[in-house]
Amino acid sequence: MRQAIMTSPGQIEFNEVQKPEIGPHDVLIEVNRIGVCGSDLHVYHGKHPYTSYPVIQGHEVGGRIAAVGAQVRSTNVGDIATFMPQITCGRCYQCRHGMEHLCENLKVMGFQAPGASQEYFSVPAAAIVTLPKGATPEQAAFIEPVAVAVHAMRRAGAPNNKHILVLGGGTIGNLTAQVAKALGATKVIITDLSNYKLQLARECGIDVAASPTDTDLEQTIATTFGPDRADTIFECVGAEATIGQAIDLARKGSTVIVVGVFGSSPRVDFGLIQDHELNVLGTLMYQRQDFELAVELVTSGRVKTVPLVTNHFDFGNYLAAYQTIEANPDRSMKVMINVNP
Image (cartoon, rainbow, N blue to C red; front, side, top):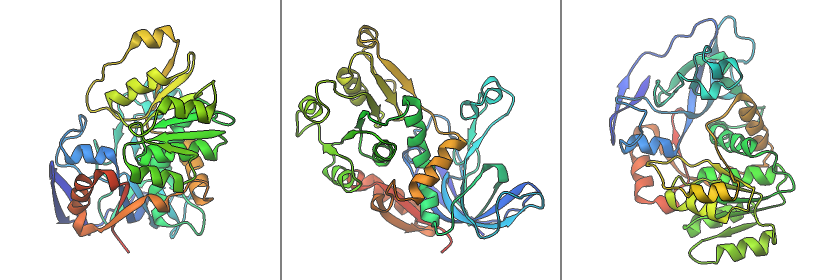
């Protein structure tokens, strides 16, 4: 089978390797779709602080179960599935207290451990999340990023009957806004500098999509939400400007959720955080319940994924996917790699 390896930043090679063997508690996935995400781009540019080379990428994956181990009863050959890419120790405080996603020894497939950028991939059955009949491998590849949004929403508390502001209209920002709407938010505003991404947000049902350079954002918030403004603000960019904007716009005593991944340390006005008694919370990855809710939201159509796919590339053109995103950042959302048909 073919396997793609990023040997150094910006370089991908293909090898012919043996199809993985599976143990009694493992599952073999025929990989059909791999989504490219922002963290993958950090690896492509050599800027991911916790990834070394060579690395086999691929953590947003959708496929079909090709084989199951002798002791596996939770899934069947032919099921459409994805997997949770965390490898945890099971021994640290976090693992022992139901916070495995914060494991002190956490490794993530595609970054610190081999990912699924190959035609077949073996994972423990405990990591598998199956989708209902009628679901597609492409929907399965979306479950991981939707689970990121679901977990971020859980960090903030139930969004029902709340006003939600999302800063950043990329894939994660869009999905965060959609999850907020799907789970009962009264109104959602999303912001971005790209008119293309703002239009996609409108197509996905977000109430207000605004560019902070074209509109008076404070006035937009007041008009949409009323004098009480936003209940929760999600920073989904990972930039100093937007985390500063989130803190400036936050109502006293409200909550800011940091979803974006920062490539450098931002300067933050802690005086304002203290004076306004803001809750500034981080969010990392997801837990199984987030994956399970993500499956429900995607397969029911409550979260739309089709409009977010901007490009498909054949497996052999993996590098072209990165080059296209790099050349068209304002018009690239979710780029999919087609592996097996």
